[in-house]
Length: 395
Ligand code: 3PG
Ligand code: MG
Image (cartoon, rainbow, N blue to C red):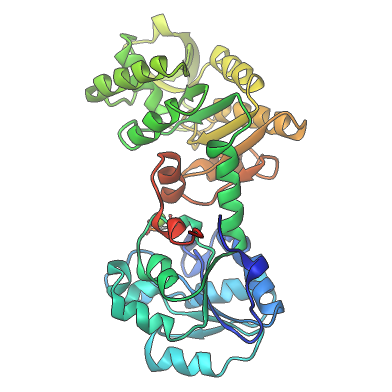
């Protein structure tokens, strides 16, 4: 249980609002404003209820003050999305921040400079927490995607001030609860991406929770190799064969079906439009590379989706950034989107490359929920407590 904006008294209050504005930027311009759009409703709700919205956020991973990681251009992008005036202060604590906050009227919106310009932020330093807390009356955290960090603005502040979950935080927690904590069964997970090594904890947790686990992408090659399949020159972590076998044993003990590719699209160069062909697993050429699911595998994945009522998706199933090796990912994503639109499936996706892959498949609006969180989504799905979420729980 979390306190939400439903019960917050916001009128005339100085509301310290933590959001995730860590958006992709090129040459000073925001190239994908999804995260900004996600937090916009929380900002306008607080402003429209008469709160003074004081926005805290990090950007990049600066070591101390570094103008290339300034939030100023992001504050401009936020103003465009909100279609409202947004002020900016060049520090998140101290006289500059205080002067800007003191000048605010109810409904005003102010962005404070990158919290990570102070090294105390990542240390969750008590004096820094106090300096932030002095600027506000209440704290709202809408940055689920930064909630795996126990930083001053994600964790420390929630101990100092009355703390609430913002609307995006609420939506993320609702979606992840529907996927993993109290899902409609059967549950299927689809996990792809290049490497097993980054997803061991995820796979180990999922096999104990879901009814079927589809493994695709480069990481599937490691599992195939562990089963004795000759995978040619495919990307794989051959030293993790024991880990892969352990995960498969664990799945068997937990009655979780592991669904691996049964055929593959193989090319001889890792590049877009490289000549390619489908092969059975007993016939992968020694100098070939598996770059996508084969047609029989896609059919199998789609059948597995048909058998499920809940789907959790993380990671692409092939080298989706190189056409035509995006086909397996796109086909499975579209199938999941159809099942969702038909009311047969709750589909939740998130983490790393997943949003890009699902945008590419043009299904982003048809899934039940797509998280913009990377590391936080993974850690939640690994079964780990997120400090920024735990601190918001009503005891
Ligand atoms: C993200 O981009 O995933 C979040 O903003 C967290 O950023 P971090 O990994 O630098 O803490
Ligand atoms: Mg990041």
